[in-house]
Length: 289
Ligand code: ADP
Ligand code: MG
Picture (cartoon, rainbow, N blue to C red):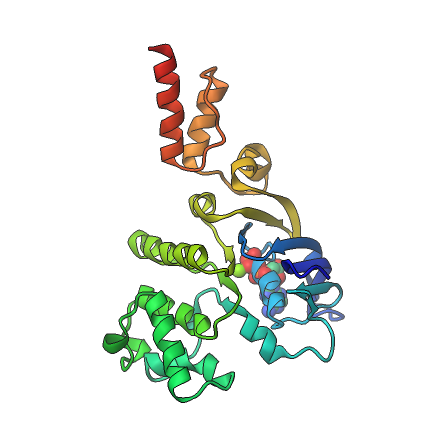
């Protein structure tokens, strides 16, 4: 399998409680490819299968039926090394604060790398670096109890715990859900910088179309366990009717530009942020002045 692809998924389906009267189909025939280093967003209504899908990528849910290759390696086989896989693919859960925490921030972030066999200085270095990446001051936070942290700080601890394992693929399942706008922007900015400065492949499950427009190279839209749409956000957000019919929206600035274009003002509605929109409008203005 192609090693330039971080992830290849072929004909993946999944049913919870399969073979029982409570069986519920969560994924149906998913096919996708994610090149190494790409920033990918997954969007879709609640219950569309996003969390079920990403849990397949680090082996938390085993593939059946279907195939997944991570950096060229089939992870469906019985002999797959799950420890190695979780080293390679870091998954930050939706609402990580619902998980049990260790007594100190240090112990919590060290948990993963320790399991991978890191000890002594190497372990401390991994924790220190991870805390630096999420902007948690090492000296200030290492001995604190996670229980006394704010929601945003807890989220950073959870992300640091995964980064400390130095994964090559980072998956974040709605990492900013429930956070205030300022904390949300800070955490996203850190993820963006991390992606820009390293060769990390990032998969972000998100509810925010603005977030997706700002960050993603490629977007997959999940709907009832299938991929209903996919593409670069610049093109994807032009599919306003299709997205609306799936219960999703488009960024406000794209909607405004589309309305201007529809009313005969010759602007290109394929913008991703307010700055691009402003440039379009100023260009029109100058052309008429
Ligand atoms: P999303 O993350 O997009 O909200 P999920 O992957 O959590 O979607 O859920 C997909 C479908 O699988 C939903 O219908 C959900 O009710 C069902 N589901 C999720 N987790 C479980 C579970 N542990 N047992 C049974 N059904 C589940
Ligand atoms: Mg989910």
